[in-house]
Length: 195
Image (cartoon, rainbow, N blue to C red; front, top):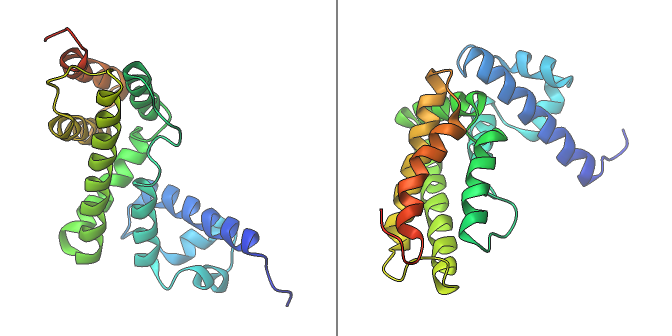
């Protein structure tokens, strides 16, 4: 059998993760079998086991992906930050399907210490990312001098988690909730303005 290139292997691994993601969203973790994932990804069981030891490893990999590279591009103004947050919600970072998956991952984290460790790490990474971004904006004069980037990052992250929670259960537009929820925060961020 010919050796597969690293690019081919990475694409195959991602295809398995994408198929698992959809299957988990449809049926939940516990009702989705390895065979279901293989069928959805159009791979053999052996091919899946080349990339993952078991279903739990797939779940852990999906959890890792949720926190990776939050915006994917530099943010250099306060308005760009707000637009990027809203776009992230619109483009499925916190869309209903992903919200449902993220909540299933949170549920697994209650009883799985490795998953809990990753969920906590992802939450803190996102919060630290927001804090670094807000600190940079403050240094550029984009934020009010007395604005606290650390506290602001915590509030924004909590707002995103709350919207994700609502989206996993309700048929409501997350980006509208986000815009409404962000308005008071952004009002206190802006230089010379107070909420």
